[in-house]
Amino acid sequence: MHDNFELLNDIDANMYIISADKPEEQAELYNGLEELFSYSLPFISDPEFKIIDPFNMKNNDVPYRGYALLDTDGNFVFHTVNDHWGEELEKTVAEIKEEIQGLK
Image (cartoon, rainbow, N blue to C red; front, side, top):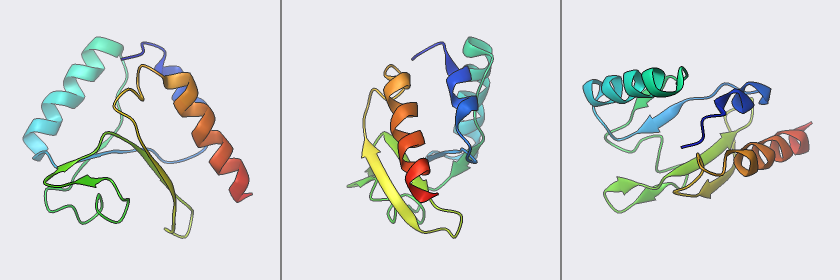
């Protein structure tokens, strides 16, 4: 993963990590990210894919890796499947900012 997570601070949006993992597993990952990068995001546990599926991020019985955006009314805007979003953080942030700008 990219060690330049401060780029995420430039995104004018609430950000969460949504996964099918149980809260205990998410706590371990959150703490690991915090320890390794001095940064993490809040996690949302979605083992029944109630959030993941409408984001078009469900891949059979596991979620895709990537990111998605809702507008302020909760409407789906876009999603990107990308296993390497963290390694390509500059590209990720640029795409998200472009989509947000398109909402204004």
